[in-house]
Image (cartoon, rainbow, N blue to C red):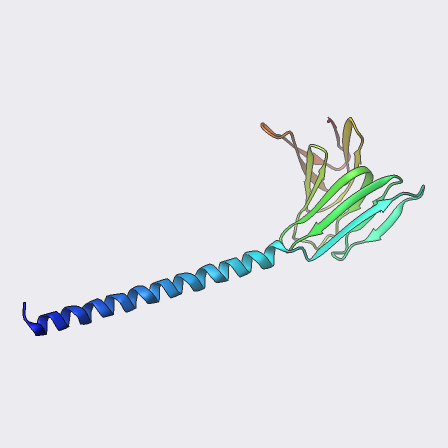
Length: 164
C-alpha cells in the first residue's frame, strides 16, 4: 500500500465517521422530541378532587362543559388529559352529564369496575360491597374484573351491578 492509498483510506474513514456522527445526532434529536412530547401529553390539563361532606348535592361544571353532581358523603378525583378524561369515584355516588361536543372519552373507575363513555349521562354508586352503574342517556361500555375482564355495552335505561 502506498502513502497516497493510506491517505485515501483515512479520508474515507473520516467521511464514514462524520456520517455516523450525523446519524447519532439525528437519533438524539428524535429521542429528545419524543421525550418532550411524552412529558407534555402525560401532564393533566385539569385536575381536581371534590369531596361532599354535606347532606345536599354538590354541583360542579367542569372545564370541558360536563356537569357533575356529587352525592352526600361522596368523593371523586378527576384528571383530564388532551386525549382522555379520567375520574375515580372513591366513595358515594356521582351523576355525570358529559358535554356533547367532547371528543376525549371519560374513563371512570369505581372499585373494580371501569366505565368508558364519550356521550350521555350516567349515575354511578360506589358502596363497600357493591358498585352500580345506571345509564340515564347515551351509552357506555363497562369493564369488570382484572384478569379476564367482562365487557358490556349499556344504553339509556340500562343498569349494571357489580359485587366488589
